[in-house]
Image (cartoon, rainbow, N blue to C red; front, side, top):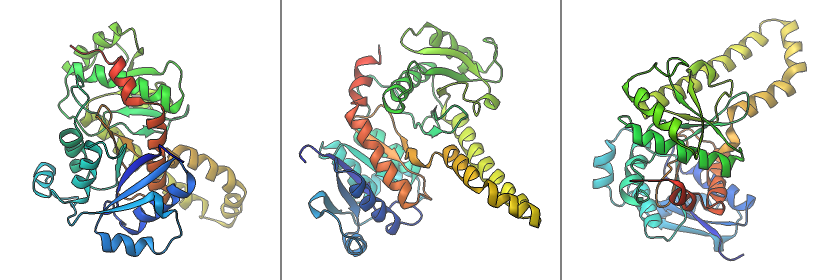
Length: 335
């Protein structure tokens, strides 16, 4: 198959790299013949892992990168000093146009800094937001921004809303996605200075379906498809989501094991419970894209499994096929 989508994977990024990352890359190759892979990292270590698998070697390339950026390193300094790290080498491949996308479960800060300063923003895009899908009762919603821009301005949030709408429509398949701004109340006059300044600008946008404010308690209900906020608020929402889900799951399991009767009941409800939990964990959705760049950059969770890595790689296919960057260039109006 010609014209495959070429995806770079940081093979050294993540808590369980390179075992999990390499396995995820192999699983992605086996799942789709539309892609080819470039793995960046220590060649000898990666090739040792690759020997465990049978795969189409014509679709797999390994590029040497001697250094690894740790989770605890200052991102800007690490990007500047570790020019031969698996993250920097991979991002430069995308910058040169030799690949369509970059995926990493490594340092979030380094990926955000490197994405914006190496790959670069689309002309006219003021900031590139990190936008994960989060589970709701009505299906996935896009939380934008959750970690890239903690001091955003109103004009940034307006662009986030527009990019988020494009993503939800063309990747998730939601027609006329509902856009809401995170606030401390439903009334228009509520909120901090940023929200008060942004709200009327979003109301004036004719190319998005703005539905007003959304309180954090209503996010899990699925009252909005695109949830707009600056990164500090977004990161708090995301981390609370993750922590609460983990705690609730633990408490449910504990409760089901308290007696013989509850254990029998647990066996009866296990299939339905497993299905519900799978739908609400969104493990099939992949990583969080950094939107508004000249190439696609996807941040996977540091504790990703091989399936998570596979799904983060495969989500790049839809992004490329739907030409999301081209749609952003065409539809985001800038001064």
